[in-house]
Length: 559
Image 1 (tube, rainbow, N blue to C red):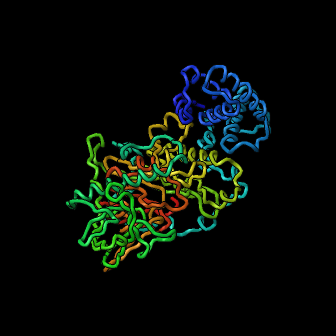
Image 2 (cartoon, rainbow, N blue to C red):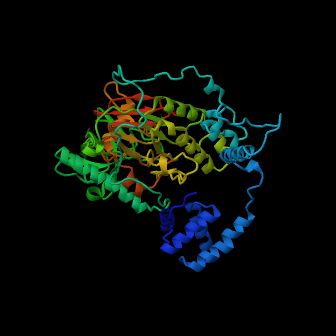
Image 3 (cartoon, rainbow, N blue to C red):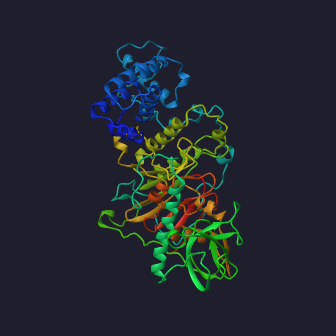
């Protein structure tokens, strides 16, 4: 077990606790001595200090903490010789391997009696087969029976007849080999931040209403400034000021009720600079075409004769960000295979990870250069999770899942990128999501495994992939209203809104099950550039479309 002193310091800083180097080393020793990880040790230490009224960290406090808390807890813990049923499948497998090695060593010093030999003798003429030497496999690493007594394979999944079917395509891809080199080529992976990338956890549930207002106001003013300069608009008028001549207003679309937005309930919430945050109802009857959703920053032109209702006659189009300009650091533009899969990695009627195990088989077969895996890895909305039928902690099941993926694809050499989800049950459901923390990652795997935040802009040899595991299409599709003079594609309109609003989640207020921390949202959930490919898992039907000169795509649920 490896323990990071830097991680201990970071965990203590979350609680505004400073720690000297000598005390940090002491905490590392305690973690190793009592088998605690960094997060668990700091949590117990803070709880102890809060319970006993101690302030700060001193050697005496650590000694008291060890004597009164850790040592007593260790004495109550069961010995290693306890009931084997409490172990998970990985621990049992390790014990079996150790016992086999010990017995093989003893057998080499004894003369076997006839009929009493339990295991085959290893000689140069009869060596152990590869299957006998190594019993590890993804199926053994991730055994559902270790955390769910009622785990049975999905009959519907096992009996499907469209396995490997190409369900959609874009452009012509004749003669393209759908196999990679397992990351062996010149490969550059880089996370783009806007203005910086999220790399660690943060305090949530501490935001105040004025802070949320400031974030929304900044969004209105920044987009308004860009549109004003692009369309050569002289000035914006206050939303409540009566005017007989056509005027131009800047604001954010809202709804005058708690229900769904409709053409009669649209209001425009003005910015702070020109309108002091005032609101005015909007009449859309004079607009021939429009597409609106709550939270959308717009510029409207129209008439406001009374100061109580604005009659819109023109709606200005939004502007996307420029595309990314590759640099020399991004490497050569050679063909790379990128495989993308999204959770949940179980079927809806079973907790077995059969789809995930099939995905690992495909990775080892096709050797993609990059594998992007989006959560959830243990879905909070799964029936057995909601019914509390699992016998192991959620964190332990997630670690088994992660270990299965990393070790099961090690032979392929593919680069792995893990994107979390607000539906990962072992984490706080706050948006944006910090990257996963996995302290058991081996040194040899650190070069090929990368944990990123949700959402994330990832550059693969200069090609920008916009990644999010949130079903934004479904959320915005339920709130958007539109009017068109001809045929129009709703999904293309929504994707265009995402790009022109320059945000991974422009909807406000968000859907009920979305807990957004708006200060971090403003920092980490904005588009730094227009992505070349936008990947959004959704419950809606899969598609690939060309929008604004780039190619957003969606993936259906599951890998």
